[in-house]
Each structure stands twice: as C-alpha cells, then as structure tokens.
Image 1 (cartoon, rainbow, N blue to C red):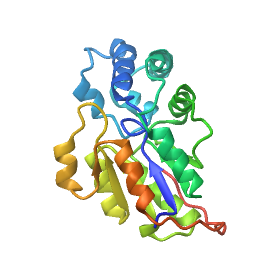
Image 2: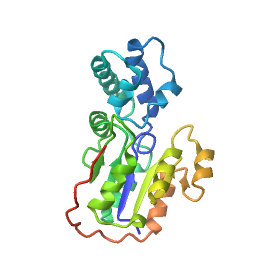
Image 3: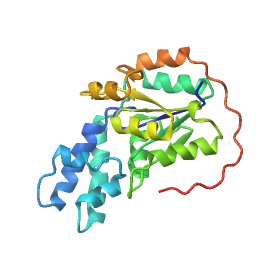
Length: 228
C-alpha cells in the first residue's frame, strides 16, 4: 500500500520534547525580560530552532542560538534511546523496500545532533528539516510525492500532534497518530483521527505487517520545487 512512510521526530521517534523545552528555557530566558514558560515555548514549535529563537529574542539572537545549541547537545545526553520497538519498526519498513523519510520542524543542526545521539544517523532515506520562516511540513511532503512520482494514497506520515493530522488532511495523505509519548493528547488525536491512533509502537509494527507494501521503482527526475 505505502511506498513512502515519513516520520516526525520529537514525540514520535523519541521522547525529546521535554528536553527541547528545557534547553530552550535555560538558554533563551536570559535574552528576554522574563522566564520563558512551557506554553510560550510550545507556541514557537513548527519553526526550526533559528526561527524559534528569533520569535522571542529581539537583540543578539546569534549569541542566543549558540547558547541553545550548547544546551541542546548537553541535555540530549539524557535522551539517547528511541521509543521501545521504534528501531524494529524502522528496520522492518526498510526491509520491505519502503522509502523511510524524516520530516521534522527541527533545523539541520539540531536534527543532526538528535540522530547522532540516538544512533540513527544513517537510517533515513530522506531527511527534510524545518524552516525559520514558516511551518513547512506540507511543502516537504509535496516534495517527496513529486520526487518519487507516487500517488497520495501511497504516502503516509506518522506524527504526534493534531496539527500533523490537519496538515495531512489538507494535502490529502494519510496520517498515523503516535500516542505513545508521556502525556500524549490521546483524546484530541482520537477526535481528529479516530481510526489511526496507536498507543504503542508495537501496535503500529503489527499494522504494517498486515499491509501490502509493493516495492518502489526508481523514480524519474523531478522538477525543482520551491522550498520555504
């Protein structure tokens, strides 16, 4: 059924969101006139780290982003494992000759740090990162659809937020909702995506085992797509 399966990173591959919030709070609060709270930080999610910092820091954002990267790498030592069964799922999909992609709001530097800390730098066939100007997951999904010349029903995205569901719905592709992180918004996910909410990675692994997944032929060269 699917020829490309794309994953979100934070809250989907690993439980990195608390660490991301703490790193941002520790490093960026000194550059603003108050202690940044979790809700204020969460509002910046969707942008990459440069966009996040610029959205709250008005002066010397370059120093602020450097401090953030230092904090991010240091705190990431507390998060060095993926969710249980995630590696098993990723390797199963690759064995089926499915293109396994990563579409994340993270910027390239933070994404590289996370992939290295988790030991999966060479797992993904495609890695598409965020923009500092606007959330760009939809554009990155469209890019992959075009590059591999596949139909929308041959693509699915696995993410942990309601916003992921809305982006996929707007584009017309399937969204699988990951509800396996701590304090997952399971009720909200089930309201928006009732048939495709999974509470454990093992459940999703079993789901893909039952799906028919044809091998993907080599794609033709795709025309250039403007990226945000």
